[in-house]
Image (cartoon, rainbow, N blue to C red; front, top):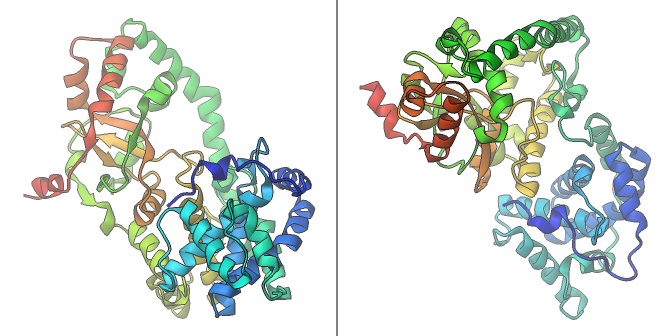
Length: 453
């Protein structure tokens, strides 16, 4: 479960705790690795000592501390020093990560609520130190940890943490750069140099064309339609999606339970996929091709990683990539700049997704991450179905039990559009459609069986 709002806006600062940590964390948000190492050198031994108080396997302890500090670096932008302290914030992240590890080990029945996890960890340590029960468990944890046996980190752990933050950007959104995301830099292979360069060139050409020619023409034609001028042909063509999104913006956003968003629609025909990419009104029987998202590759991949997070070498995904490696055709992606040509690279790849899962478990679903919003479409009956935008993020939310997540409507079936707008045109038609969106509900699994008959 995500940590409460106190993680985003920490508890009031205690007397006697240095405010320098706040400054260091703000410097981390700007990419200052020296500031990160100053925080790391103080907190790492203490966090490692607490981990060893609950777990006997050194690799499990190292993994928890590695992830906690890396998540602190990656999410430093979230921290606000107004009325809070960086140290408490970092220790809440650590408690979230330790709690997940203990749940995976089934070593301790921690409460689902992350705030209670902090309290459980502090109270489990307190009896050993014969101290009074702390009023604020988070503020007491470093002191409790300091009384435990010294836990010096290995050089390998220090190097691994430094290597990870060297590739991992501390700011939101930069993971989504096209063709070779920063976080995957450690998996780069020289053989991908030209495919990556070609992909980046194609991306920049497409974006440049849309910016200089495509969008201005679309927007001008769309503006005429919005004002009620002759634009029936534009509506018949499906209306330009980007123009509709810019016009309606947040009115296209819905809040759903991930557990209810189970029906997904696919577009195996590449020509159809390209045709609908920038249309908002979708014609045809595309909403007949429904499937359960939990049977898809994205969900199975994420669920597999979470199930085997204690030892990713036991996961089906690891076995799949190893089989390809043994066959002499290692998995590669020029878009992500990744080549899984060694067992170590395969594990590193899976650990990246595990880190994404721990991030979401700690901070909740962040709509600002990723290249695209989590996309959905409205079928002919006004039901919400998932499209191929953000399937991995949806799977993470479902596997982790996230309560709600925001989605963006990227297309509607023409039949539903006609039913909602009636005789309205232009802005009035958009308004009628937007007012109907909050009444839409996710398509039930029975919709899949209905179309399969």
